[in-house]
Image (cartoon, rainbow, N blue to C red):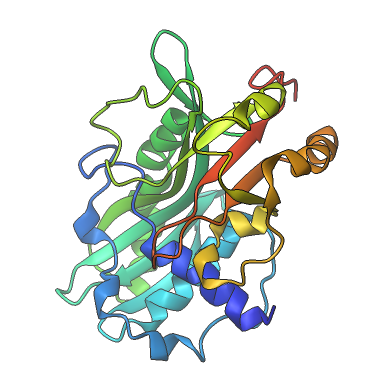
Length: 290
């Protein structure tokens, strides 16, 4: 597929994705985030990156987010990935985005793209495919460390040289949450945005059992490459779909090789609505040694 279509599909995923969490939690302020409703899609066509320098989802998302931000005519971008140093010139971290909104407000925004699976340990717990990565820890890191970089004296001094005044820090966490197929939703926390993107997950040894589930058996499926996790597949050709049971061998091979495995159904044609996605976890997940 042409690269322009591929990156446009990724951008569509990014701009239509709701936040995973509700405003007011862990410093998330939705009014500090860009207003994409004023974005002219025609202004993006010539600005989509011609080269993606990384296959890491976070870096891909940052490149595309920056492209869209620069296309907002009433926003001014002052910096991206600005390093912050202490008095001994040791790196403290990077500020993802510094921009000014139409109302004159300066914003420091930290962007994260994450995928978490729900488990229970007395209460719902959200773990990443790498089970050492948790939603709770990521939110704490964003709120207590990453968004605080712009309050460091050296950051304030550097931003002043760019013409940036007092900065309002916030974070934006995009992605998808996966609920166990046979357990259903168990998290009613006010932390989560009710509009967050959802999917299901199962262990590999539940694959054949899942074939009879009403959400599974009537659909055709394809295995997503990791770069496609942040792709709005409704804007891409529907190729490579097959019955659920015929993909088991490929799924086994991917998991045996250490790859995280996600399947997608061909069940949605609505703009901005993702098809159903199922995450397949190794049988020993989350008890995986690293």
